[in-house]
Image 1 (cartoon, rainbow, N blue to C red):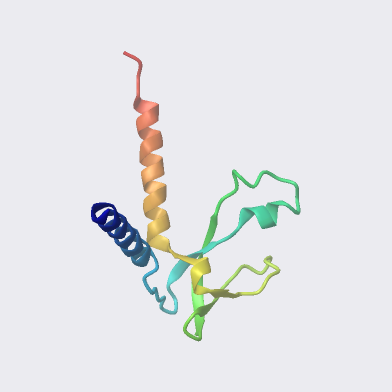
Image 2 (image 1 turned 30 degrees about the vertical axis):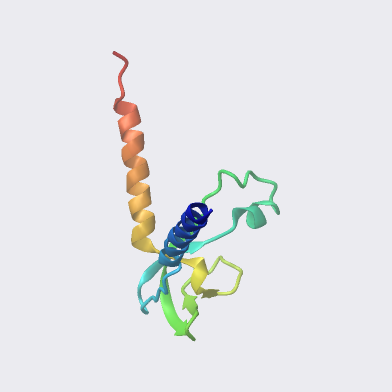
Length: 117
């Protein structure tokens, strides 16, 4: 019984440490570029479009001002008709998105080169 309890405890500790790594405090500087994380189901439900295939991040946008410890004001295009202050969890580092894009393009390139033998 102690073996099972110890294994469960070890698994819970491992999972908690993985989650804590993802939730590390991030901080952006003014004039840094970030991507805005959007929920496509809310936006595309109004126009009756397919939200599953919609992009999850848009941008890059420049941070104009820091408002408190958790909010940032970003510069948006003039066409956009919503508020320009966003919480920290809505912003993504630009380099992480670019790395994911490069990996995706590399995988697509490898699929194109895959010739039948």
